[in-house]
Length: 91
Image (tube, rainbow, N blue to C red; front, side, top):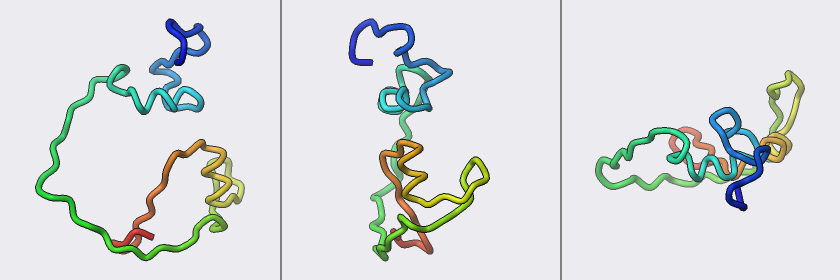
């Protein structure tokens, strides 16, 4: 929502805030859409060990039932970030 007020078809609403392109603004401004609450952390965060690998070509069944790769799924879902934990390590 760059212009104010945005055009009707560009407005982020409760119906579209989790879909691209509306999600780019929606996730960063969720408090303007939904009631939220701060949850303070308990103690100091723990560092997780690294066991880095490459997952781009790992295949799985996508939402449409067809085989896809992690890379294709990330691109088509407009994912901004992904963290994979495996047995307590950042994979």
